[in-house]
Length: 341
Image 1: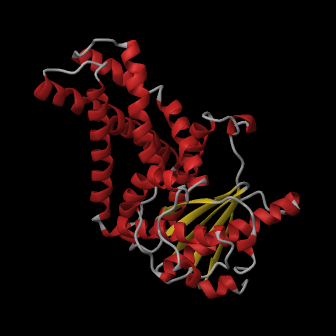
Image 2: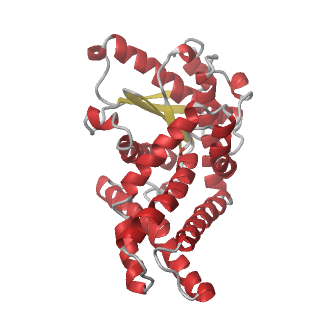
């Protein structure tokens, strides 16, 4: 099964989770997690978009749609991996990792608010303060304000990633991120899904979410430097800065849409010298958010990918015959999965 699935044409993306990897093909989603006893728990389920198909095909609109759906998929996969991780903890420590549906929804909303604060409000506040300290105040029409805000945004993002990498738990997540990239690279190269083949590939990937985030930061500088001066010309006061934060929030979906199209174009022509220059900032930051995985971590990514591709083929052949409910299986080892047991 592992040798046969790598020739499937399905487009697959993924995400690292706690001690595992999530993979999504056009019509299914899988999550594979390694337990402490080395068993691999595999969850698979059909995936259906909540967004109309036409919206997922419109250029510049589809970027915001992909971002929304990726966040939804990611939260679900993280909940599943956290539940599996918790089962290996001492009983007195259980309950601190996983959350109920209500509290996880609250955490998701809180995460969005915090992201807006860190990625929108804080960089502008820092740029406004730096402008007053070093330049006597910068107006919304001054390109230096937007360049400063973009620079602070980059520093905040990179600083957070570097701090997360220092913890053992997050470093292992970054290793699984590298394993996800390697597994997808093997599939895209049309090679059998084996750890030996995975070792040949880098942990970086042109379609990585880290690269997307870097493109968003760069695009936001250009968009905000164009739009805000037209709405708030020659203004530099604190209230103007607060107004710029409020105006920046509804611009996030268009910014994501533009960034998605640019990254998609860059990934399509990733071998072209110009595309390599464009993707270089994302590749550099991927050195932080990915780490060289161990073979057993790559095995987990291979399980999630192989099953996603197999289920995609099953959905194409006979959709009615495939379970519409999530299916969870446990394999004592990677060899057992590969043997089809």
